[in-house]
Image 1: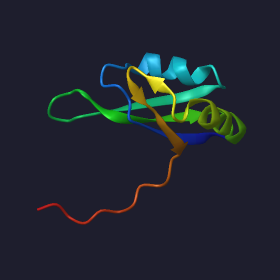
Image 2 (image 1 turned 120 degrees about the horizontal axis):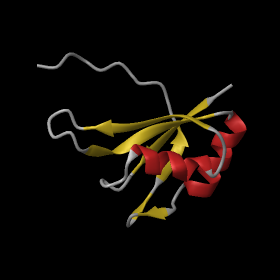
Image 3 (image 1 turned 90 degrees about the horizontal axis):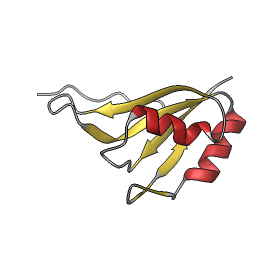
Image 4 (image 1 turned 45 degrees about the vertical axis):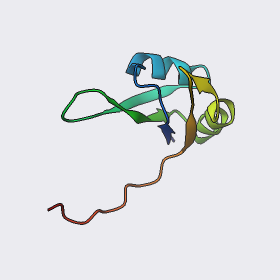
Length: 89
């Protein structure tokens, strides 16, 4: 069973490959999503990593939460389901 992690405060120059490599040191990474701005096409500073198991996800959280990458301290925790948002005007 896999586990999805939220990764925040990412450096804006990080690539999906670099992000996947960072987490693969702590377990099997099955998916990497680096969220991009629709208008500029640049990274938004956060993403999601799907780890192979909840144990690997916890290992990555313990190892990487608060670690400085590219001058920014990462925020790493279990992803929560997206909450519904109201209509945009």
